[in-house]
Image (tube, rainbow, N blue to C red; front, side, top):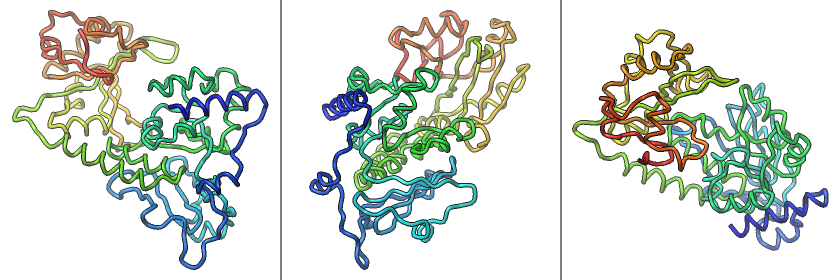
Length: 389
């Protein structure tokens, strides 16, 4: 965390001077981070024990291929290929890269030096990976919604990433002032493709939680920390397998729901989310998912869409518009959920510490006298831990 604070302070100084200070290559060579020695014969900077590979049965959206002094990470969602060259080595030619990994039709190729010295994290999803790898000091700007103590301190030291709809000039300067901008695709990935130093990290687009966890390998490739990533991911797989080893004789029925209030960008509605990664977590711990397609089938106006647009494997989202009659919609919605034992409430709460069971009831138009099992037993969970009183 102290390193992160130092990085944030340095970023503030650099910003005030109008330039970003890069550690001299000579210092990096002396520290062992860079090397000007050209690999000879079968020599390589990336032997097998320093490589990562996406498990063929898990993450489906990225691959990593290695050469003697560079590696090629391909992201199939954004259709981008990242050539990561060992610090101190000459950037490989197009022919040399193609010999390792051909650039597919319609793909974009970008070049970076590794290990990366400075970056911006435009999503909080990536921060747990960065924390685990111990490279917080390589992050110059971070999303304002970051919550971990170190990130909070960094935000207080001018490390806040300006939004694209805020100070446009500052936003552009921040993006240009780092080696890599870790980001996520918009509706068509144009935002990533047009950002010269942009790198798409499609962690939320994978099918399940273990698949998403594998993206620690993806991030590690930019910092030459593949061995650490392999070790951490193996531990995650073991922990997940242990947590999902039990199964109840009478598994509870679970539903993930939310309520969308009417706004300028959203119609009022009730929603059941059956994103694949959510249903997978439920079954992996021995519970049962609501059969939403059957339970909600009789509700007028039901809308069924892919959880991730254009990706049927991502699961489904079931939306019930209120049509300006919340009471009637709520009645039909919860009639369909009569058999549910456990609710995972995904309503956004600006201040989670004040959102309690009473808040839940009020938000969804329910009362404490309801006969619904999850109300009677107070089995309402939040992604920010169990619902409080």
